[in-house]
Image 1 (tube, rainbow, N blue to C red):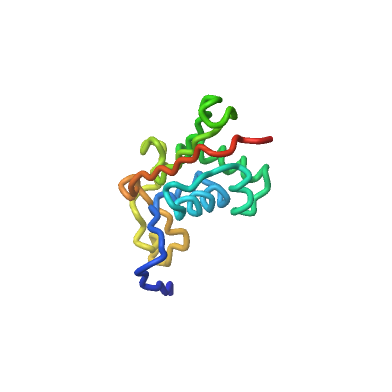
Image 2: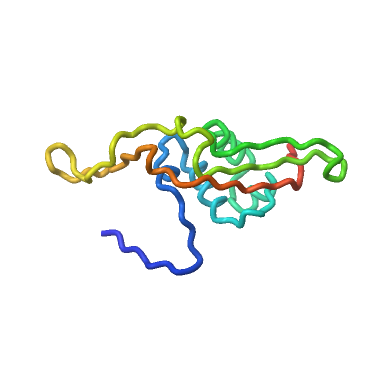
Length: 146
């Protein structure tokens, strides 16, 4: 049995489609869940993301590349000079991928039972109609470093 608390403050609502997107690794999914709980004006940098997530540079870049590939993240390099003469990057995060067509169609939601009536332990059915709204979090601070 799953026992849930009734929340009235300090909680985040996240689309089940994001949580159930089987294309995402656990690291990429956790990164999105972490990011979506942040304030909209949070300032992102690779160094800062490594610090708050505890991921190493390779794992972090892998998760970010995965999120970009599936449309959850867009990183734009901003022109030099506008931000103190250094290159800056804008991170746009999306709770729903840029294209709804990019979501896998896992069929209709399961009723929790298999064909023989026994419990379905996977119960991962999700359709594109389960998707929530789009959220964007932007940062223009700290250039990407190697």
